[in-house]
Image 1 (cartoon, rainbow, N blue to C red):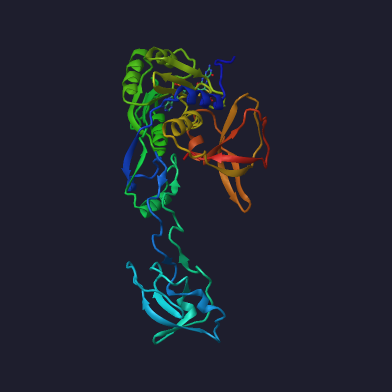
Image 2 (image 1 turned 90 degrees about the vertical axis):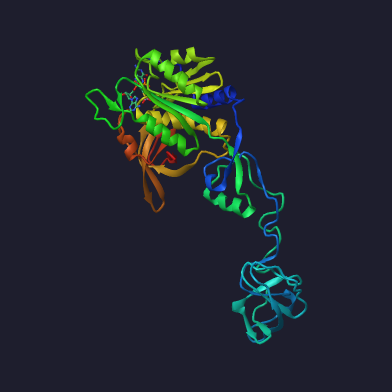
Length: 409
Ligand SMILES: Nc1nc2c(c(=O)[nH]1)N[C@H]1C(S)=C(S)[C@@H](COP(=O)(O)OP(=O)(O)OC[C@H]3O[C@@H](n4cnc5c(N)ncnc54)[C@H](O)[C@@H]3O)O[C@H]1N2
Ligand code: MOO
């Protein structure tokens, strides 16, 4: 018997975009040392040309390329050295016909010169330099604004700031940047059987895995976890904790109690907390079918399945894209690795099926193998390197089928 009317993952995402079209998105300034992983609130525009002066890329002599035409080892060009430029300093020197100026790597190329000849291709004799190889115009020179132009958009709004971008920000003279504020998220784990992780569980009890798993995934994408608690299956208590959690967060994740067992009271409580309440109860993904999606006034509430691996998949499939795109305003596309299937699987569940996989590296690329196990096994997570999705309309995969492998982070 089908317990829920299920909605497709893509439909859920589209519904969330509509429901949260007015979601808050203020910015805050952060120092660039703390900016990694944060998301740019505005286009980042260069306020200057980089470089701001003509810069040599080599140690050598600045000269007019014309004066080197036809020179060779046996017939070098003889140029008069009129001076040198020093690192970190400007120069008034002007290079005229048959003249040269010594320039260090990164130094200013004096006016009049249109190329720099590498020191290896020259020989200095007293006040003169012999040039053994012709140099082309602009050879070994970075012109003003060649790297970045004044007013150029260097990084666009929505970019997730990565380590390489920190160097760009430093080069442009940004000591701080405006990023989207971290969404505040609460996590509640429900279940009479749950105990704290430092306890030895009695028979029937299990350690609360999901608050930890969810918190680590949330913080890795830039959320702030503002409230965490473990609640027994008691509707009054659960309602009280959910109210407390919603008061301090933009998003509430409730793990467990999403299914239809007698104790699974989460949907009813959500509906008592605010409008419009539960939007979807059941998503066409496997695992993760009993996922709940709700809006309580301007807050998002998700009920995730209790089984740890199902909880993670449901989070990755539904919650993370919502937070990234709608709250964090990230423009980053979902990342994956390309592999081929090392196994055969037939699915006919009418759902998008997720498999945890391990990867074997071969000369021709990665081959993905399934991590087998039943719902609720944590070994699914200890062995998995990532997961694959088999679309709803497919009946399965064969050995050799190209796959996209998504990583947990
Ligand atoms: N009659 C049906 N029963 C179930 C269905 C169904 O469609 N019809 N769906 C099954 C699927 S699939 C899943 S997944 C689970 C989801 O159940 P709940 O979301 O209601 O979660 P619980 O019943 O509370 O827990 C399930 C399982 O996970 C363990 N758990 C719960 N919370 C945690 C936690 N924080 N850390 C570690 N483990 C946790 C819990 O002890 C249970 O073993 O429903 C199926 N049933
Ligand atoms: O759908 Mo459940 O979430 O199979 O484990």
